[in-house]
Structures are given as C-alpha cells and as structure tokens.
Length: 234
Image (cartoon, rainbow, N blue to C red; front, side, top):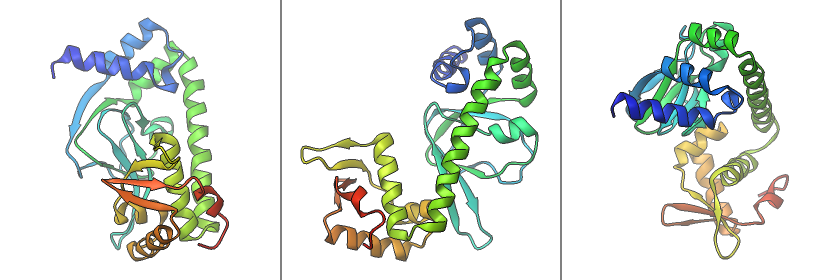
C-alpha cells in the first residue's frame, strides 16, 4: 500500500476514535502525518509486558490481543483490539513500562505514534486529553468488571459472561432469537476466563445439553435464556 492510501486509512480511523472525535481538521491532518505504519504477522508480539516503549497504537487492519503471560506459559487474555481500536495509552500517559503483552491475533496493520508527538498534539488541542481520559476511565470500569468476574463468578458464569459480551459487541440474531457469534477455540475461551481448557470443555458440554449453546458452521448460537443462567448453578 502506498503512503497516500495509508494516510487516508489513518485519517478515516481517526474520525471514528473517541479520543480524536473533537479534534479540529487541521490538527487531525497534522497528527495523522505523524503516525508511522507497522505490519505484524499473526502470532507475533507487538510489545511485551514491562517493555519500556511508550508509543500509542491504532489498529488499522486486523486484530491484536492484550494478555498477561505466566511463567508456566498460561495466558490470560484481557481484551481484543479490532479495527479502529487504540492501545498503549497507559505508558503513553505516564511513561512507565507496559502493563500487558500485545499479540497479533491475525495479520495486522498498525498506526504508531511516538509519545513526544502525542504530547505536542495535546498542547495544540487540549480537548484530546479530556477525550483520552474518558476512554481510559471506560477501560478501567471494564477492568473492574473483569476482576469482579474472576473473583466472584465460577467458570460457567465467566464463560456465559464472555460469550454474551462478544454477542453484544459483534453478534447477530437468527430466526429463533439465538445470538450468533464467531466460534472460539477452547484455548481462547480458557485464556479469556482464567480457567483451564478441560474446565471449558466440561462447561460447553453442559451448556449444549441444556440447549443454552449450540455449535453451527464455525459459529456459536447462544440461547436468549443464557442471561438467566448467570447466578444459577449450571
């Protein structure tokens, strides 16, 4: 892709980002020209937890995930960033090491902005800082929900919560009212819920037996009754 289409892609992504929604056109054009393009293959690391980089990233194509990696190789997926999402804002703001490892879920193209250029943009247009703080607060609330889920919910409820969250963001309904989402592997579900693949396998079997979850052509179909199962013994 030549530089011109890349810049157009960055500008289009900018206009859909909450942190840049109030940015004036001249400042938006200037900021977009400060970004560099980085391509990364599926499975490759963008940066590791505790790395000292402080750049801001925007997903222009593809998807990446933020994870915590244990010494025993266990991965806990915190969230997935898709087209138009940004990440890296914590180190961008405080200059401290990264709090999670970012891994490419698929071949991806990222826009990368150096910290000093972002700080310069804030001086030119301070409204960016307000919008960024709002986005950070929203993510902190999501993190609180995840911590609460890991602390107080069992594997059944954590899995149902995960599937319903994905359905709310990306799912659609079939003619019977079932929510349809792209199928996840048992490893992915275990990583998202802080559990083992063996536990996920057991839960999937129970949910299928109770007709709460069905598998069909690369998709999960989630019963409209799934919300009623949270807080109950599956």
